[in-house]
Image 1 (cartoon, rainbow, N blue to C red):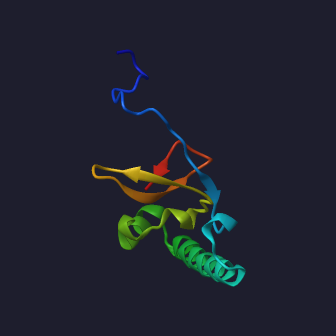
Image 2 (image 1 turned 45 degrees about the horizontal axis):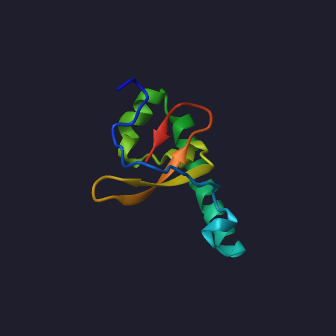
Image 3 (image 1 turned 120 degrees about the horizontal axis):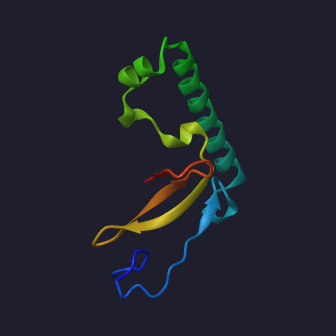
Length: 104
């Protein structure tokens, strides 16, 4: 089997649905979407203010803890719903369009 070929022969179809944060497909009301957006922006401002108040970024990471950093604070706007594991369960995946990183 050459590189790039899938080992799972039962994998016949592959499709993804890429959507923008707070898109119509999420079935949120305009008011709910706006509230989510405002709350997210307020949290992002607090995160960045805290980051700027630290002497170094290293000190910030040690004091804040990576498990408390939501990747969406860094500006992610595109998401996919993907199935992970066996048995599978669905998670929202942040698509970082400016790098090769993937966050689940």
